[in-house]
Image 1 (cartoon, one colour):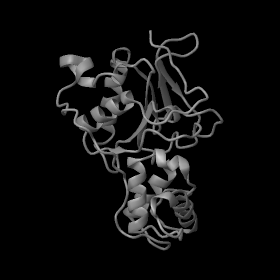
Image 2 (cartoon, one colour):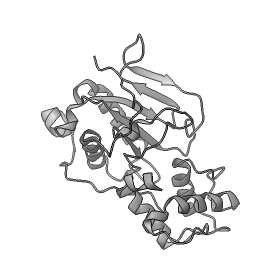
Image 3 (cartoon, rainbow, N blue to C red):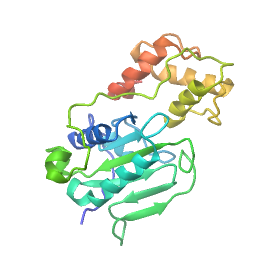
Length: 251
């Protein structure tokens, strides 16, 4: 039986091949979702221990707004759980449903456990899943298609390299703006734990402060002067950060 393994205390230098293989499979099979990143050195949300992201074995996938939707998320979770021993999938965090699945817990086998709301858990806007692979996952050496053989799932796409993407609005946004694009921006900021208050599509003072703090973190990516205005340079810097999250460590 697969036994859950946390991050330990020593960060890695980047994402593992295993999590990149799983990410490529999900983005290829359930198209339209957003890659929210694999590797970044940080602690778990609201905690003091190292996140599995910091050892390159975790990935976050936004499945809605935009994306293929909740039905695709449910299908992806079912596929991962049904084949977790074979693929070496050790954990899933389902934020909207406020629950975490693990391949094992002390004295117990695989299963879901409800969580206390907070840090995105239980929030209707937190439409993403967090996946983790085990250190011994065969995906570190082989693709999902190779591991599964002919059982990789109907409609699965070839596992070509999938470039990281970001759920980032394109128009320039500033304090006083309202609408869907502002809500999209607030969702991205909230994911990265910037305080926007309520994700309501209203670009107020808290959203401006969050954008400013984000811009400060993105300084190594030539974002320009942190001014709280989300424009082309902020968009370009943020998009680049999704493709090179290791550079955010220096920020």
